[in-house]
Length: 372
Image (cartoon, rainbow, N blue to C red; front, side):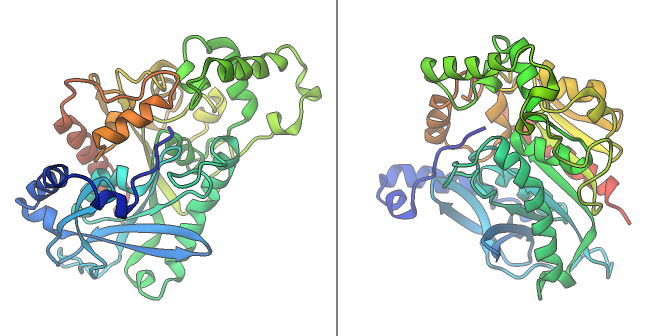
């Protein structure tokens, strides 16, 4: 789902001292555990694609405020050698953010995976991120999988990271729209027409998805009308924009290096039942019982129902859609919810420790699936 633009660093520094102290205290609390002091972060660039890397390091992490996000990392630190006596390369997981998102809102999961020994690569999807959402939606859904492949190619060719990583057997995790990206990498194919058909039938039940990013009733009516224009028209008369299948589909992966996938509250109504049934690589699923932006029965539950290769990692009964983000500052939560037709605020009373346990489950899933 769409995330608002984080505050530029200069504006962040002008915030009140009390607010900065609170966020630094939140970040500093994580330093109390030795594992948290072993998370490094850096960035690489590849043909205009920015990729954030989160990884194990031996240098002590320190509290950092990057915009409004408190994180505990060792910036630009060298990656740690494997401490299990092995001489092989570290396993890699590519993390795909949600619509209008950024790597920082998914940092809790990235850091969890780094502490478990993985290297996490987080591409900033072009035209569908917190700085530029001009291509959000079907255009970005087409380009996002190619950006996963570009990320793998960039790391395989990188003079430092190519010696440290196994880029032949990788995992892909995605949250929300990133979940659709991950499912595409797992071999599912999608069509805009399947989205249209879903919203023709379930628009009033699933407005958080069908009206995503449209809180204004007038614009909602315009989108409703666009769905209706395709009703009853034979497929052969519809434009290719609607009928073209994107992704390899029927179990064929667009990049054979992806051998396992995990998703959190994924967009799944794009995919036909046959396409989900055709997935052959293992897929782990985190769902949220109070997700009103992507109702589980149309998305997460539907995925688990039709995908034989899928397994539940965690069902967070008390969580909403945005509860799968961490860190997720309150000011951003308010701004993001204001952009949505339905839902978007964290659920009152949701226990963040349950999110961490779900993320620990993602790490266990990949330890099992990416073993040599």
